[in-house]
Image (cartoon, rainbow, N blue to C red; front, side, top):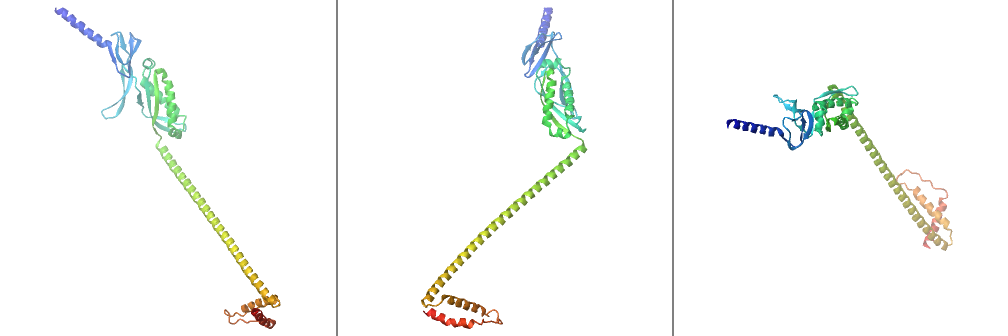
Length: 328
């Protein structure tokens, strides 16, 4: 009985070991490559999977991860894992020196986002997948940035990222890896280059400020000149209108005066005609008297000497006849 009990326990333990080693539970977004007697057999996916213990074995692969040491600093470590993570993974590579086309040595820090899409290729097509991706990214980064000047590297990050992603995606396709994105974190040129770039930036901003100020001054001068021009035109137009109105007023006034004089002369002529006298002599006598009044006006100059023409007595003699005409 004791021997039978020992055999039963042994068989039970062996059965449990077989069940444990033959039953594999794979998590979501994970995969396991199974080899049978050293040869690829199948790929286990998420869920419960059954394999033959001691005959079917998982193929381990190297994986890269970041951990912190006792000082709290981040460090990169590698570990052998029998499961392959199918989620998108990011690798943060250490800084590396790159020489640009204009011979400027600068430090570059890059990030790469990739995803394993074919676990079989990632195991059998490359020995150390994380190390291969890192080295490929570094060499490709040197080649791409070596074709550009420093200014192009600083201003064309999107173009560089797109070009790097296309090259890396094509190169890692045979490894069963899909490169989704590449990002340049930092581009650090030497200190003297930074100082020169800062001076250039300040000079450029100063130049732009001067150009904007000059354009503002120019615009203000143009607007001011246009304003003065408009004011001068309006003033000249106003003066022209005023002169025209004044001339028209003087013309109307002169016409009115002429009409009044003509009417007066006509009435005088009618009155003189009734006496059968010459109206011309009457008008001459009137004008002569008016002229004498102006000549004899000494209100402003008391020392004025008045010269009477010799025919004044004859003209004054006609005043009596004028009086008679007026009475008639």
